[in-house]
Image 1 (cartoon, one colour):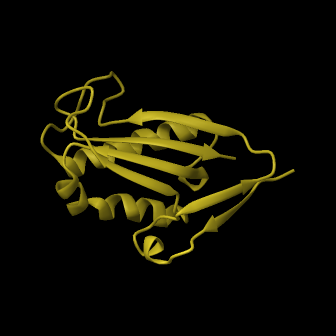
Image 2 (cartoon, helix red, strand yellow):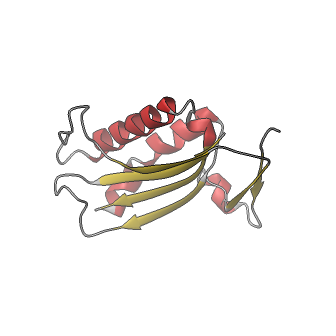
Image 3 (cartoon, one colour):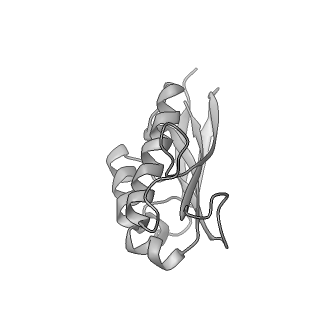
Length: 133
């Protein structure tokens, strides 16, 4: 049995921002719960202090690496939680995230939260996700 995904959008404004209000997944999917991905090197060293755009791009790259290890891609995302220490600055670079999702043809359900700090003080953004295949 294959999985089917259907967007659930009682309103259309969220689709203009690149996400669905809900995603109904049916079938027998494999589910991958992904820990928060940040701007960390392969050696576990934080990268790009004070550079929100570079941190966001590396966090997305790291998210795609985890997906790839599970045989998935961004196309499989159904949920994306975004944590940031500066919501206003993240919005200045949000097009980077929206473009990657649009290229993958997905609009996963999304929550963005402003937080006081992340686990490592120099980090500014963290992406936590759920994917199905």
